[in-house]
Length: 454
Length: 90
Image 1 (cartoon, rainbow over the protein chains, first blue to last red):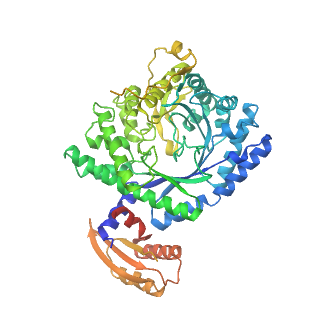
Image 2 (image 1 turned 60 degrees about the vertical axis):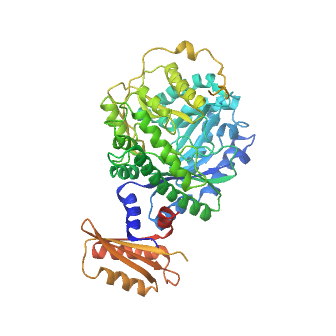
Image 3 (image 1 turned 120 degrees about the vertical axis):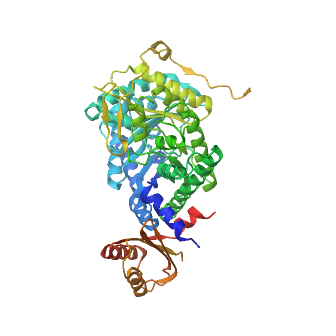
């Protein structure tokens, strides 16, 4: 039988170390909503989502109460809208009107984000894909809860550089459209290489076409739990360090597994995956950078950071894989800057640069995340940053992403306030040299060779 | 029927256990195990209870006990046993 110390350990994780279930995300297939008529299509989308998710928030709250574990967000991901709206959308306004429908239904059922305003263009863009991408600035500036993502490359297809070039422009345009709110629109827009179909986390969640009609994916998080566990093994060798992270990751993932199974049972929707991610929040004690410091760095970004992050990410996955048979592809450590007080401190101290962050993304679970850059950064430079990140994902057969915010009217030294879970960020300097001729070449970067690995 | 874990955390005062037990007896909830310890000067108690014959729903019990806790200056939480089982047992 469970003893009092085990009970206290679990409750301490929740009460003092910010252990939480970050999100229950319900994925919904919208392919059945395809229609030639825009109004009909919008109506079908609204009804399909509403029917599937009307009990999602209440169920999340019930489970939270039952187990005494906070479930911070309830969210929805849908089939990439470029596929759903392709038949009826002839203008960017048409596509943006679907975004409005998504926003309305998200508000109606009470979820805080809905993801899937997306296009998958890793090899080429259809007309609908391009139209959707061009509608992103309008869609994100006229909605509150809609998140957008675009997959620009993959290990199997290479990188679609035409789309990379376009996305540089679109990110800048989205920043312009939302400049009154510190270019907040860009915080809801992410580009991927090797985007997973079952990601529960925003802004990149969408319901992949390889998925069933409905699915429950759960994301758990607990950087504070790992940090506290590591405080007890200060000065010990790497074996002890790794063992401690692994055991902690196991415990945290088990909570996610339990919540996912319970939610799946109550909602009558199959369980997809648990994603154990060390996803920080601006709250004190909920920081991935603090774990890196606890491992032995003065600041995140100091020499040794990439190695420390690599071992952290790997041990988190190893513990998670033992805890659940269906662990999501993104499990590991997220390193968003604005959402992590330790990262912000590191940037402000001059310890952490964009280039070091790029190196860290080779071994972390996603990529360049929530980084504020000067508003006068050129579109081609943003495309260059994206291309670099996509290349890392493509060659290393991993998911990489870029969520970067060119803050209109602000420059290096300024601070940006996004509010809530999105946090605040110092504007970081970008390498000033041009990559215009490179980005303007057009076409695709071919897929890398998969053999001759020696 | 799965079991429920009730935890009581707070400053030690006279009659905490008595009050919680009276409530549980009243609702026909059977106590299977009680243990307590002092951690960093705080009183910590854990009960394993079986709610199979309870006259109350889980949520009502959780709400009632939370209120009871407030009235005696301690924090009382009810949680389904699975969360601890999942985390601490393979």
